[in-house]
Image (cartoon, rainbow, N blue to C red; front, side):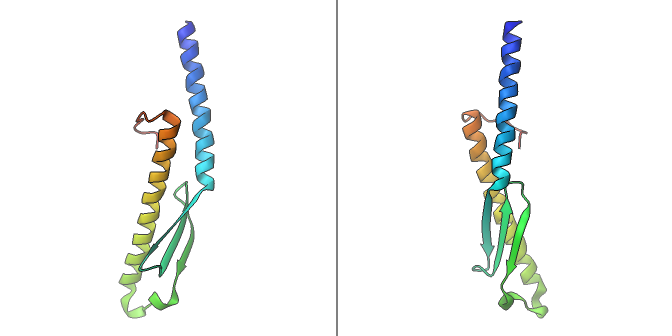
Length: 103
């Protein structure tokens, strides 16, 4: 019975640490760009786009598809970098033990 109590306490502590980590990550931002900096995206640790900057020079009404591709590339790069940041935080929290499905 003592072991179950100890295990539950450890699980509660891990849950608290994860909540703290999620809050820290939400406050962090990553900036990514595409097209040599013509399109810039800033994203927070919750994968929310908080800023999108588009250089007027890249806006060509005759080639909207290129602008769309640049925005997609910048957003995807930002998401990828956020995922890396989350994995690094999770690794430090779990001591390097992989816990699939947590994020």
